[in-house]
Structures are given as C-alpha cells and as structure tokens.
Length: 413
Image 1 (cartoon, rainbow, N blue to C red):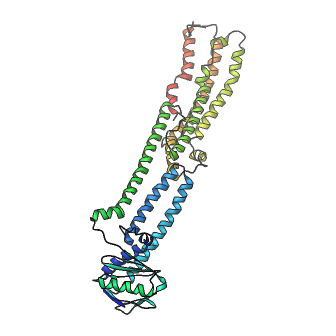
Image 2 (cartoon, one colour):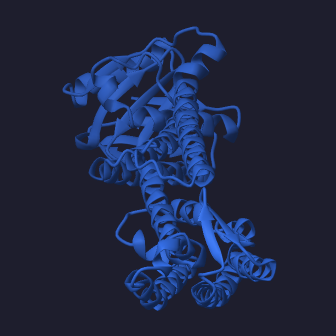
Image 3 (cartoon, rainbow, N blue to C red):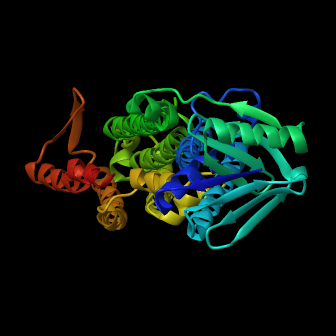
C-alpha cells in the first residue's frame, strides 16, 4: 500500500511542516479532542515568547510587592518556557533547511512506514514508534516519536491509511479535525492577540504602578524639604516605600543636627544671656561663661556631622542590607543629593569659622556689659544706656553676633 504526494513548491512544504510540528506539540489536546483552533509551530512560539514577556512583568511586580519566593518560581518558569520555545524554533529552522524535494511516495508495509522522496532519500519508521494520526480536510498527518509524515487528503488516501493501520497496528488512534471557517482577525486574536492584550495590560499596570509610586515619593520628599519636618508615615509602596523610609530618616537626622547647631551656636547662646546675670553674686554669669566653650564645641561637632551627611558612601551604607535594584539605589541618591551640595558643604565649613568668631564676640559683649553695668538698665525688655557712646559699642557688638542671622539660615539644605 502506498500514497504518492506532490507539492507546488518548497514554500508549501515548509508551510505544512510548520503546521505539522505545531500539531505535534499539541498531542494532549488532540487526544482530548480539544483542538478547536490548532496552532502552527510559529504561532505557538510567538505566543510563548509573549507569555515570557508577560511572565517577566509578573516577576517584576512580584518583586515590587515583596513576594520574592513566588517571583523566583516564575523566573524559573520563564527560563524553562523560553528554553523549550527556542529549541522548538531551532528544530523548525533545521527541518526547513533540510527540505529538498516536493514530491515522492509513502509506502506502508509490515516493517513500518517508508517515505521515499524524488531524490531517492528514504525516511523510515517502525510501527512501534507511530503514536497517532490526525486527518484534516486537506491533509493527513502521521505522528511518530521523532518524525511527522504529512500528505494531501483524499477519499483514496484516507482509505489507504485506515486500512494500513487496521492491518499493521490497530491500536493507533485516528483523530479527525474539521477546519473552522473563521475570519482572519478572529483567528489571529485567539492564537496571538489575546496574549498581546494580556502583555499590554501587564506592561501598562507595571508602568502605571511605578509612575504612581514615584509621584507619591517625590511629593513626600518635597513636602519634607519645604516644611523642614518629617512625616514618618510611608505613603508609597514596596521598593518605593523602602526608599521613602530611608530618605525620610536621612533628612530627619540632618534636621536634628541642624537644630542641635542652631541651639548651640552664637545666636542660640546669646538668647540664654539674661540681664540679671550681671548683678547679685554673678554665679550664673560665671557658669554661662564656662559653658561657652562647650556650646561652641557642640555647634562645631553638629556642623561636622552635617557635612559628613553629604557623603554618598555614608548614605549607601544605610541601605546596604536592603535588596534594592540599581534603579532604586539611584533614585535614593537623587532624592538626597544635588549638584549644589558642594556649595552647601563650603558654606557649612565657612559657618564653623563665622560661629567661632561670633562666640568670641559674645565674650566681648559680656565683658563690655559687665564693666558698664552701672550705665545701662532694662525697661519693658529693652536695654537702655545713659551714654550714647556705650550704646553704639553695644549695638556694634550685638549686630556682629546676630546681624547675619537671616542670611546664615540659607546655608542649610
């Protein structure tokens, strides 16, 4: 028993080969008679690659939501699907490359199936390796373990195949599939389009999620800088929430140091100097003078620590234990540091010298007030001098200490 076959050209052979290899990967659906819309191999590969992209964004979102174990599972699944899909595609290209002939004959005998092409090349398969047969309106496919035979369908050819199976291996299953007449767009949608829509939905959700959280994060940090006050509630989510937490903690530490400096610098110290200290036994004044050096050192230490906070390495050490990607690390640094930082550091270093000079000015002011205490008095919280030259000297010393206060506040980030 034999069947002669002939195709128009090699392109037609590759087309049917594409369908045959695609059907071969859907044997389970074939057995369950679920192949309503059978896919060719290239359609399957395109679908699987789209699913790989879809899986990638699922993994990305799972990592964002802190589901690392589940994300790892999907990552392994992605690798397996991608590798399997690539192997199938390479197999198809290899088979296409080997297509040489467009006609020949398929012969059925007790030993098995023999396909002899016009060039004399013979491909044989014993019946033990033949798995099942699929009959379509225009083609018949015979699936073996490593080989697929296909040829045109006709009443004669179908009868020959059925008789051969009945005679040599009755246990082989024969499946029939009627091609559905569908609009090309509908076929494309079910084979590929639905996966494209899923991919676009997942991609859009990922991008939207990022933009939403990034907007919240920038708004929160902008509010923190504007109010110079930290709201420790975390409003952004997942990796963005981690960045928000550490950025707020960094600014809070900086503002605490800033307050430490402002309470111990010359202006803050001068506010503690009271008129009554210059009278009675002057013990409070002696204590105040003794603490000047301590307060100056505290102010200087606060400025040194503030300067140290402009070091990116110091900032990165704080998030060392967090599993943040490069994007989030860069985002973290962008929220903490600017191009003007070098100017801030320079101004803070100058402030140390200026504050030291002002603290010396306080000493001179105390000495002046002490020796002229008989020439001044307080009325309604206002200091008055009997002699104008002493008032001028006082105003000069006082202005030196507090005159640039408004300007000095601008050095802080």
